Image 1 (cartoon, rainbow, N blue to C red):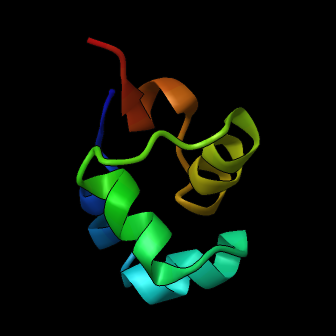
Image 2 (image 1 turned 30 degrees about the horizontal axis):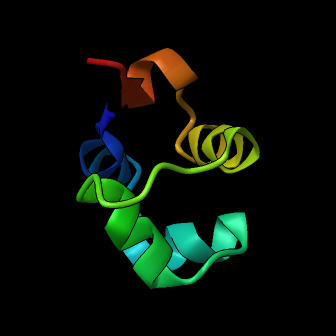
Length: 63
């Protein structure tokens, strides 16, 4: 699954660390999700999209 988290973080002026704190995970978790090495749970995906003021469809791309 691809995602646009890095792009959306930049739009919201958030670092990986800041996003991680907003969704209560470690910075490495955000890094692994951005690189496609880890697929988040539905709950975490929802929290990420909420923090990025986005939607699941806009943030995560199923291919």
